[in-house]
Length: 190
Picture 1 (spheres, rainbow, N blue to C red):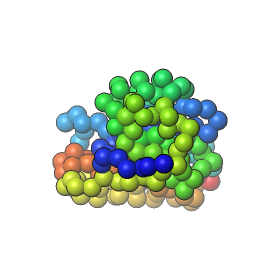
Picture 2: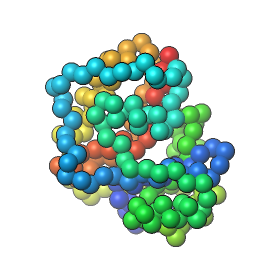
Picture 3: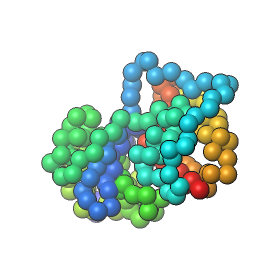
Picture 4: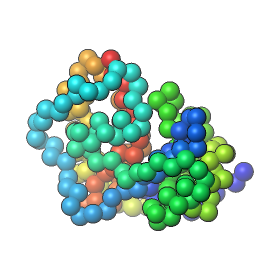
């Protein structure tokens, strides 16, 4: 299989669940009203409703959002036709990833495909084998990345001993001034 493709646009993401052909489609928000994360502000976030154990991708992003790390836009579909429509709705160029709270690193098992279009996403549902290549060539928003790292640290500090494992992967760093987006992650709580 030839995995050569044009560079992907960061921030567009879709996910495939373990048992079904479900896809959570993610796309970066580009609205100007998304502000930078306040790196100084100390906040208390209600964490009582979080379950113990690994969180799935939707729960991970919801947790990160509570601490001011904005998630990418997403939607879940069940069929190849629905996946193709979702890719069109998101202006094509999406990422397909297995949705699972049992597989924490989807790329390790061939569960990630980047830069898919409406024309290619249906077939990819059945053959998720290519390694993900991250596009380069843009000036990253380093300040937003630093702010996201501080926010992630605040989250870890507040969770304390409840936090067993956490990561945001990928964290899309957009062009300078555009911020970051948590498209996927892992959070395991005790």
